[in-house]
Image 1 (cartoon, rainbow, N blue to C red):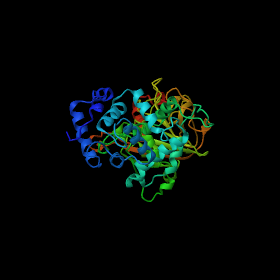
Image 2 (cartoon, one colour):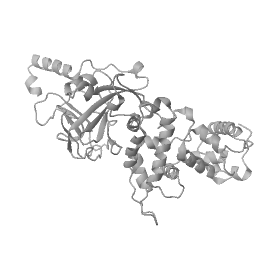
Image 3 (cartoon, rainbow, N blue to C red):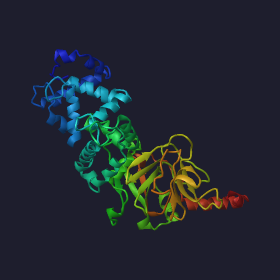
Image 4 (cartoon, helix red, strand yellow):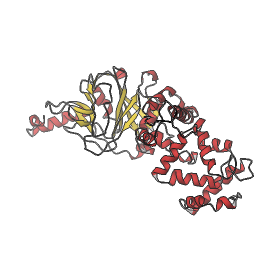
Length: 425
């Protein structure tokens, strides 16, 4: 339980009493024991956690770490320190409060200047802290990372609020919530800062990218920061190891080669496209690439943008037009290629079977804008990554054998035997 004792005034405060109710007795005992350990290292006679110990333990670097300490210390009764009562009140609001309470706390957290005005410079400082915390301090994550990528994350933020006496507009709470929706990795990270560092904090995971040793990372569209961003669209434990299955510079710009590479491996894939105008975007396919004459897939699928701005667009449930894979159909109503959302000839994202052209339109499936600058685009680079989920080597279900094309030929042969081959097209 520890030796530190709260002062009578703070211990009996209404806020502390209310906050304590958010935790079980065991959880409070564990938190007090943990607090006592950190306070003992702080040179405060066990009364509080000092700033250096707080920052070192929670490991949040830069301006964001300083602001986190400031907000938690504000709830404490000592100068420049975090008391047990202050920690409990903050954690109750931040981790156990309503969504509105948590959003308000995180909104204040991002106001690193503490002036109640959330500007682009505040967010730039927040993103710099995130990069330093996740990538700079982690050798494995640092290799192959690119700090300038975070500029695309900042570009997706909207500032619509007029700030009195300042020409630059600021971010409203509504703007901030919308930013967190399209940047789920950011929201996961900002929502887990007071959790124990060894607890596998959400938003701190960076996928491991595996690609041929003889291939330069400069040829890849995907880097560690982009992978972190896309990984935010998965559940926490899905972000593990990603393997490059197809790259147009390595394998040629071929639909058949693409299908052969991606359908013999992992069921979950990330498709990334760079068009001739320099925009980068793509989609996460949660289901295997299988030949269908109509849409299929599930609600885990989503679209994303990476450059010049980064966003994720999840399914709305408006329809089931999620994933598309049409191979060797002759009907004009079934365009051959791969796609996501919308409807045939008007997809949220589509690559033709020639892999030489595509289009992206607004879709109610994902409420996405066109991902490319113009609705129709020409791909310059196409790559696809297979997602290896933790524990999947032991629990992976048996995949259908053969590539899409091989299974298509088998299906044709069977149909011929029963006289239905021509009707299938």
